[in-house]
Image (cartoon, rainbow, N blue to C red; front, side, top):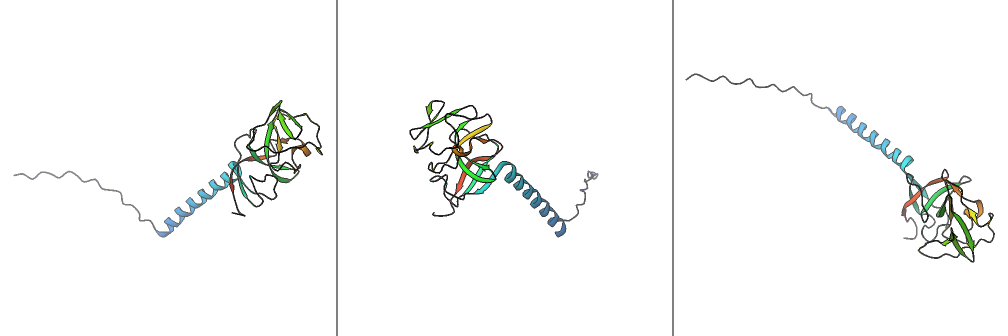
Length: 178
């Protein structure tokens, strides 16, 4: 019997073995890419702030860590972080550009209607530096503190522009009084 010829075996390319140096370089590249992505996330998508003060009490307390989302425009009822005259603040959006805000008899109305809140906070226009009714300029927000007796909000300095807004609060981490 004649012997059958064996088909030629395909030769596999010889792979170079990875050295510890190769693994270290690969790890450093992965770490560097991860760090860059986290930095982009922190500076462009989210903001991380520490609340100093009780302007947003009882929702946000002094010392709480506040995470904000920067890519969505705030709407009425949202808690936002903003910077006014170089000072970081937190407040609740009551009205947006084009709305008319009126404060009378400890009650806030927007475009003639009462605002929807989980709790009704007595709000006074006494001592306000702006005149009511107040027309909110376009691309701006009328912001009130949740702790309404603290008048260091839009009643004192007018509307907050969208350029001063640092994002909508979406996560609060308690650091004190847990």
